[in-house]
Length: 312
Image (cartoon, rainbow, N blue to C red; front, top):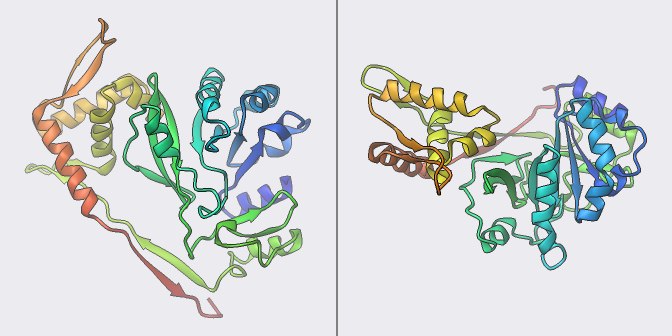
């Protein structure tokens, strides 16, 4: 494992290591995971998660980037999802809720978004992708952001290298069985050749973005507009800050810079009271957010494949 992680890192590739909570509870040498880009501790039950507490603590002390991925299986752990979220929150982990990891959608049709909506959660529109397979959304559990993965969506241009629990390595398993399956020597060849052994074509996407330009040349980029859209959805400045990994004062200053660029007030806020404080957008800001969402919905991603020459 350590050698595979190092091979990917040395070549500028992302390494996401998924560790079952049951295995984490038995792991005596988490040091071998220290070079991983991200570590996802995934679990199906609260009992598994609680047993992995010592493993999690050792990695957090080492300041590793770690996520908790609670796997939702309809009819199996419906009542445990909320408890797993609470445990992850108490440990200071970013919490994700996912359908069964790397399982073809035809075999594991768990719809996390509908499940969470059925529990009364407000779920955001998609705001990004995870490994090009899952759509990412966010909901809030008592002002704590919980990331939801919907999908997976099978794509022929998927370029993920996947190692199954038995040690066989091949293409993304959602495109079929691990066929062909590679061992460690073949994997080194794949990594060393820029994945040429996986496919002889490269997939590219044109992803359009939006920017707002005022009459005097002030520019708000898509991150600013997304922040404003998220603020309208959540009604909470602190919730937006946690979701973006920023402090509330940093978000507040950013909103004030946006107001200065636009020349009008964007939000009204209040503190405390029965409603525990909140934020509401001004009519002008609401009109801006609605226009932004409308334009963004009309943009399409253009994908194409480029066949590589043998000498490329």
